[in-house]
Image 1 (cartoon, rainbow, N blue to C red):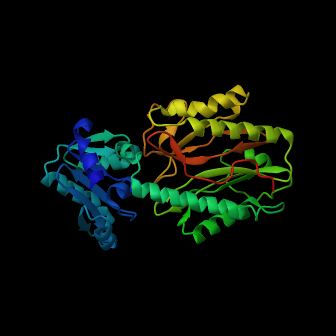
Image 2 (cartoon, rainbow, N blue to C red):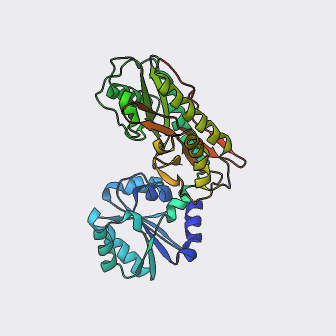
Image 3 (tube, helix red, strand yellow):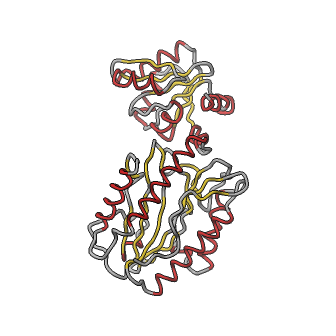
Length: 355
């Protein structure tokens, strides 16, 4: 299994001879197991997935590269890790420090007879580069989101509430094969469009308002993330001007992002343009992030990101301007870093739509 091989190749550099995996998404990434409980132990020669009786058949079917060990209850999972690390004489056991609380760490440290080595983003670094199956799932999730946006344009009108718009998106994406939305859908109209994370409320949409729609589909474990801002009736000139700036910033970024550049350089393509136009202080968030099993993954594309973009990464590009009491605009696409540039995965129109 390529993922196991890649993880084991990192052992020497990480200073470990085995790794304990506890995070749900990292467990799924390494094993293919989609259950909600279980511990993974990977050594240089063996790989185990420890589950309780509820998941034995599922784990056997999904995690074919792993030896499945059944325990009676969830409470017995750690005891089995203790037995296996003792049996295999594990001396240095890596664990996911970003995903282990202090109580669990204390328990591991007291019960496991190996030196516990804290690791940060070890598996997440592997997850940054998507394989063909992952890319195919994300592309389908993006197609579902695009179809939902097209469908939604006939639904939005004055008097409809934000939560009704959100529910329509959710319902349609599920009908198209999505398990659910990829995250809590953002529908922010009028003054609320100045809230970057304005999750849908009971506010009614009014004529002349901008509406920011930030949503995505969750499909076969993978996610899309798209934002479009539309107007209901003619918006004022200030909002139109902001929209033009954000649209141009996104266009500049999409035409410039390529492999080999640092995340902070990719961030600067849209940030510098918006700053030149006088709205730098109104663009307070990062310009994008990785997507995959999680809606927010490495690399986080901001002014401090030192990660170099590589082919196979899937990222969002999402410049925005937010002015309190007036409103805001964000436009977001998903892109795949290719050998010589990027491929845009979300294809909904980006020019201002006035409904």
